[in-house]
Each structure stands twice: as structure tokens, then as C-alpha cells.
Length: 303
Image 1 (tube, helix red, strand yellow):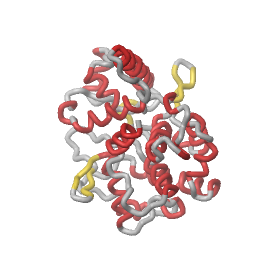
Image 2 (cartoon, one colour):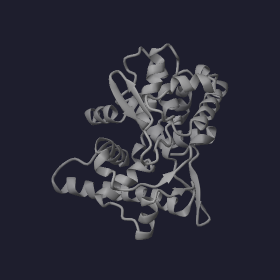
Image 3 (cartoon, helix red, strand yellow):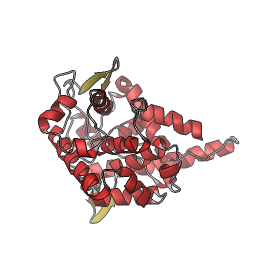
Image 4 (cartoon, helix red, strand yellow):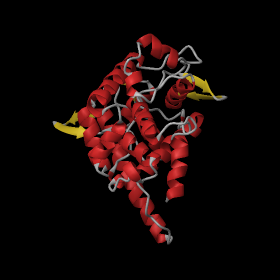
């Protein structure tokens, strides 16, 4: 189990700054700000991707953003310290998140706003330490999710569907999972209810599910996706795609456990987090292969 968590940590956060002399508390702060601005990296077809070359490797999208943060740390900028990043100007952040292509990181101004808001709140109410919030969670991933969503509106990923509020909570669940990985499921990351998390419903994981046949879209919806229709956050079809992907992941976990049990293999440790990480990493490593499978496009800060 410990080895499995370590492998997932390396796959999902291959540029985790373990070599920069940060304390465990500073690493938790790093995870917090990374997940606070981990949203919406897609680019229109034919447009150069947001890319960053760091330590001899060029990365796109989310990993480019992480690389830019770590590059800034190498340059002496304390990107893990909310006292520091909450005061950065737009011009400061343009330098920090500079791209090696002509494409700027999508929703740049929204990310600046998020960094200022979460950084200021973390300083004012929690003495600049995300570890204080982790302590309040008392070993519960679900309690951590509720705390963060309540204190930091940018994590409050909800929608109204057929008159009922739906809490999708993509990024705040990623935050709980990343903390679980960072602490190896021990100490402040020893969440007793980690298996209750769903997948992190974005636009790439459903794309991989459609590719594998775990999801199937109607002809009408598929036509909209192929035409690169821009959905609005909260549109019924957008909520349905995300909700169905969450349900599909639970079915994948259930069926996989049956297969493992029938083969006399252990099922402990299999959860939706690992399904999500597998699908997300598969899409990343086989991007060209999945290009023919369209994905839904939304411009918002929630995923």
C-alpha cells in the first residue's frame, strides 16, 4: 500500500519540490496554492499550448504551471508562502508564469485574483499555515473538504441541477487527495475516510472514459463537442457529463474489486482517487491517441 501511494505521488506530482529544502508545513502550503490555481488549461485546437521548459523538460498545461512555480522558487521567490504570493502584482506573476510559447496561461487574471484571495485569508485567519486547517480536519478528508470549501469560495464547485444543489468539488477533493499523498496517509494526512472521495470531475477524465467506453455520449452531444461548443459552468449537459463520470468511476471501482476478489487478489486500497489518477495520467501519456475523442469545454475557475 505504501509503495502504491508513492508511485501515485510520483505520477501525479512528478515535479513535487522535494529537493528545495522545504519543511513539511511549507510543502503542505505548496500543495494548497498549486491546487488553488489548478484549473482550466485547455487551449482551442490549433493554438499553441501554455508550455514551460524546466530542468530540461517541456511541460504543458497543469504541469507547466507547476514547473513555473518551482522555477520561481529556484529564483528565490517564496511561492509556498502566502505572505509572499498574496502581495504579488499582475506584472510579477506574468514573469513567474511566463510561457515558452506565445500562449499565456488561460484565465490568468482569475488566477491572480485567486492567489490574492486565498493567500490573504490563509494569513489573516490561519497564520499563513495550511497545516492549521489540516489539524482542524481531525483526520477526515470530508471534513477538510467542507472546511476549505467554506473558507475559500474559489474551491466551492457547486451547480444547481433540476432545482437541487450538486456539490461536485473537483479541486478541493484533489487537495485532500494530494495532502493524503504528501503525508503518505500518515500524520496530518491520515484520513480515515479517504475512500469516500469521488473522482475529480474535470474535462480530461471524462474524455478518457469516453475513449475506453466507460461513458457514451448521445449523437447530439457528441456533435456539440466536435464543434468545440463552449459550455457555461452549470449548463445541464455540463453537469450531466461531470456527474455521470463520477458515477462511472464508482462502477469501475466496484467491478474491479469483483475481478480482483475472483482472482484471489487483495482489493484494499482501490478507490476512486486511483481510478482518476490512472485515467488522467493515461490521457497525459497518450494525448495524441485521444485527440480524436472530443471533450467538453468550459471557461471557469472550478475545473
